[in-house]
Amino acid sequence: MQYSISDGISDLTALSAGTRARLLGLIVGLDKAQWLGPKLPIVNPPLWEIGHVGWFEERWCLRYRPDGGLSASLMPLADALYDSARVDHNTRWDLPLPDVALTLDYLAAVREAAEARFQQQAGDREAAYFRTLSIFHEQMHCEALTYTRQTLGYPAVDKGGVAIPESLHSSCAGDVEIPGGRFDLGAVEDAGFVFDNEKWAHGVDLRPFRMARTPVTCAQFAEFVDAGGYRDRSFWSEQGWSWRMQEGALAPVYWQCEGNTWCRRVNDRLEPLVEREPVVHVNWYEAEAWCHWAGRRLPSEAEWEFAASTVPDSPHIKRKYPWGQTAHSPVTANLHGGAGRCATVDALPAGDSAWGIRQMIGNVWEWTADWLKPYPGFVRDPYAEYSEPWFGNHKVLRGGCYATSPELIRNTWRNFYTPDRRDVIAGFRTCAL
Image (cartoon, rainbow, N blue to C red; front, top):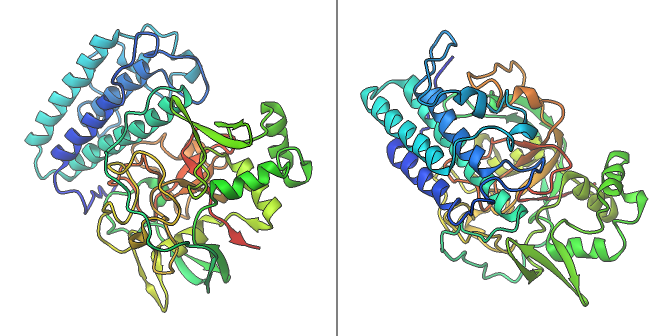
């Protein structure tokens, strides 16, 4: 394969160290019981997850052989414990996992050996590719651990302490008219490191559409809840209504009504909804139902990428980020290193796309209408389990959230979850019918 490495990362050693510091910060304060936690389908036991991160780095940076084989692990039986493609999720609480100290020792030993190997392979594009893959995988697990701390009600620790600048404008309302046209969806071959489901750019034709400048807010979603939207079958698809009835859902998962005020649990505390923050922790079915109630629709992922990356009157230009080609800053996107929570939907005007659409990167993942499917000519990468097993049964999300690492995200990035997942830091943006 062509080993593409990121054009925006000059020091993988520094990025690796920063990512590891973040990972370790997310397990600070866990007691013995919390290292395993309750058996739930949407979380991993942190004790298993930390070992898995070490196993993945060792798998690709130390043990991988071009013939597809593997050399021996630093930990006996590591493959039987931590290979996520072969260790069933429900069994991870019952495995003979090493204790916390041994797990952290394994994590550190792998990092030391991987760093030494990487320094010996200076200039090797294959080594740089797998090093980048390992770092990005660890960053994904940092985000997943952020979800876990919210799901289980643990205190928040993933905060950068940087205040998010608010917009000086009173609002950022309404839709933007986008003419559509011929558009290359997906990543181009000189884009640096990309995952296999982003490959490669291919022409699609889009009809004109109108997209909301901001995601749906807590206040807008509360109107749906207060109007009985969760009780009215007419707003829900057959699959969505089946999910709602099974779960007994009458509001977003962390919402509670205190008197006449909607509140939301944020990690281990309850706080009033912030009306201008985007609604978050809603699944695809809930987003779809709100759209039916409001007379709107979810965008296709092609519409989303067109609005995020193209420039009016210059169809040949495609930006890496909504605001341009340069990496994010605290004034363009709310990503890791920001406030550790959502900004209001009016914030960060410097990050607008060329069409004037706000916060397409960062703050909240945005559900799209589409199922995850391969692009034409799809060829899986060496990490075969990343995309291919999920084609056709996961919905696509775009844009990243406040817990997403900035090195990871770009306009072509395709995230994917099953439509019932509410633990993801996800909201949604809509289009006119």
